[in-house]
Image (tube, rainbow over all chains, first blue to last red; front, side, top):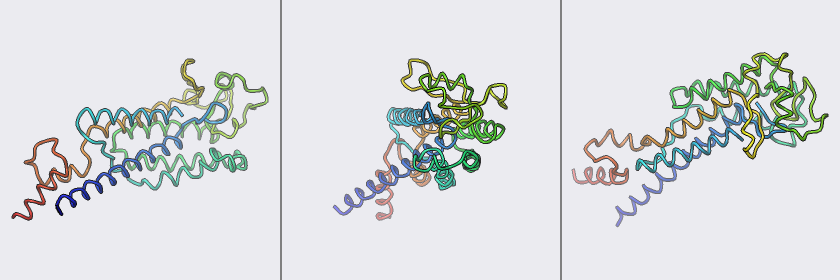
Length: 47
Length: 221
């Protein structure tokens, strides 16, 4: 039983860490593309 | 918007690729991640936040754009070994180059402005001035440096969104898609780390199973 709980904890911890890392990468990429170019609209954006 | 679409499309494509291969999306280890929000913050104030962007003069906005993109270029350089970053970096270099050579803002021709915003009143923009509160400056093609790197492309008429973009933007979109597509085709670092310790386990076995076996081996031995 303790082993199952420990495995569940490992799994949840790993899932959290994985999604947090993935989210950070996506957020970083969004900021990067917005800053690198990314016209935001037809009237005022551009670059 | 076009670049955000590339990010969304890349994320979807990478997820489908990972799902079809029985893998999980694996975040790459990017270096100097903190540099990106630091570089973007001045741009957010100068071009995006309505409360502040009207207060910032054009000269300062141009300096913010060049400085910010220089920092982003440093980030791209330090991550050049990651998939897609050659396109991200090259696109940024092309945008930065044409921006610097045209006074710090991205040039756009009056013809392109008219096609992007056909309903805009004639006094909505002026030749030689910044277009609204954005990153563009309206210049005739004859006065542009490297006009072919300016915001000169348009999305197809059937697309529900009118916007002009540059060759650099195209490369940036390709790089963003490529990076996210690639992360659907590799095991994450946790898997790789465990693979180094246990090469005898069959492919496709989960990390938890590997850890369970590893823990069992340790307690048993």
